[in-house]
Length: 473
Image (cartoon, rainbow, N blue to C red; front, side):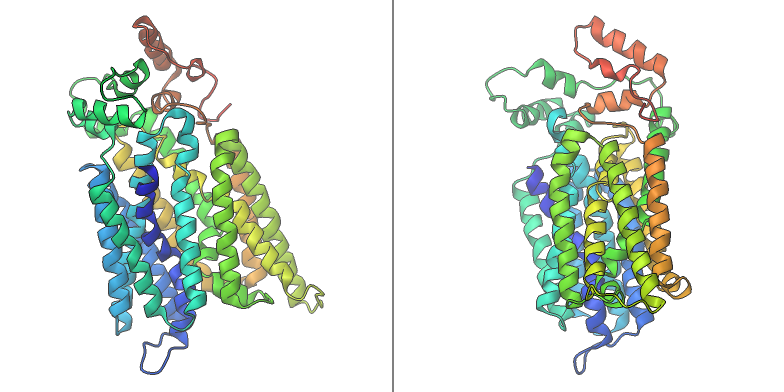
């Protein structure tokens, strides 16, 4: 079911890479087709990135109606966006299609990640929540391949992208069930228990295990607490601040700039291969890394891969900056344009095993259930807003700082991000959602809650008492 849910991500994810392959074709159009300037191409990328945080907010609202409903709406909007782009005859219509597509992109990742986090057991959750990022990487790779095959036909690329939301609509309607935790929180305990037994491999005619009953047990809440009260609790504010900071370093280390402008950046960097083929290679590097991330996260958790990722990004962005600086100074390079390709591929590879994937994976697991819909969507929305800022600033940064200066800036932000992870990012590896929530509570509340749960004979992992705090120490 988690795999089926992640099909929802493919169509919207293609919006990330579409401007990279469609922009050059729109600047050099076929006869009687739409012709865009460089500034208009930049806005085509930016409006999609601006639509993405809107989609995250909409996702938060729709998710309250159900995870399944949210995934269906996401696929429908994604298909509408791609069809609009395909049928566009003016620049304005293209922008409208890109905004719609961007909204779908913002709606896609959060409900899918939350869905997987809510149906997966604690043993496999760390691996399975990374599947969303694998799906995003696959979607970007597919649209890069489409761009390589149809270099001058951006309409055909958009039409092929529209097929994926159509498939996901069918899967959502006829295959994917609602999550047990959502049903539990909406007074449907019998249905929640029945579906949870299926997910945990318990036959229908056998009683639920104590672990299942523990997962479905509602957390006691004080009476007359409104939503604002839940939002201002320490267990909500602390993870919100931590995740928002993580997204800031993710975006200002240049990851999405590279994804949105892969073809143009490879062209400006002096790569020896066809620029569309270079984009495909970048997509392949990201996809392979996203596959490895699932196993890496399961074995090493969140903190270690994030730090290794940031250090690797710093090395390869720094190397790219030095290469371009020397080239600008007239140094003759004997690499035949291979170094830029290697640096960009390795930068994307290293970013994917940590900085690119882990923030989105953690969004589905760090927030309390009462505010998960709102805070997960809001966090992703602000993260994508950071993305829109970096994408819009890219032409100005490359002009004012030079390509080598821009890459040096990305390298500096990457290493500062490593320091942030070291000091503040908590570890969630192997913990249930209940344990993760307890981790952000005050120590006294956590000890009191665990004592109560032990008294009624329920098992709670001892690591939630004092071993992990906000700093992860």
